[in-house]
Length: 158
Image 1 (cartoon, rainbow, N blue to C red):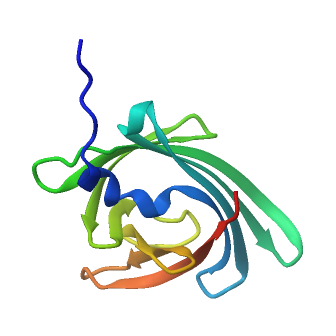
Image 2 (cartoon, rainbow, N blue to C red):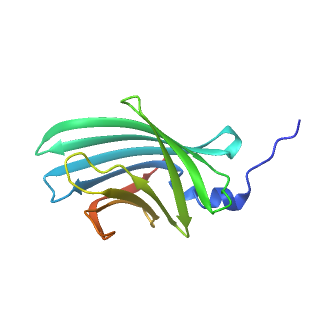
């Protein structure tokens, strides 16, 4: 039986997410801070990208909540230019996402944070010199997205 290797171009679109990253940011008006750790790596001969994530939410100096998740992204680009992804959470939920890939940028619909009122949310990941930036934008109506949070994830030495 022969095995097909993913094309270099398929892997190149997601490659900036491979490695160990840490970062900090704020939610909304800044009352809650978030600290994130992400480990991205190729899986199953490079056909999938896994992202193991831990996010700690802090109010003042106190840790208010910690969440863990695992995202698995199919490396092969779909005919419309997107990638399928599944996110498994520590709450036992599974979320399906369709990632839209543009040069150095990935976007997808995301869940609206439970503490705010908005009709929809989207997450945008942008490659940077230091790693990548993760922005969550929300739409409070009229398809006018506004920035809700930004986490700058810095690549760590292996």
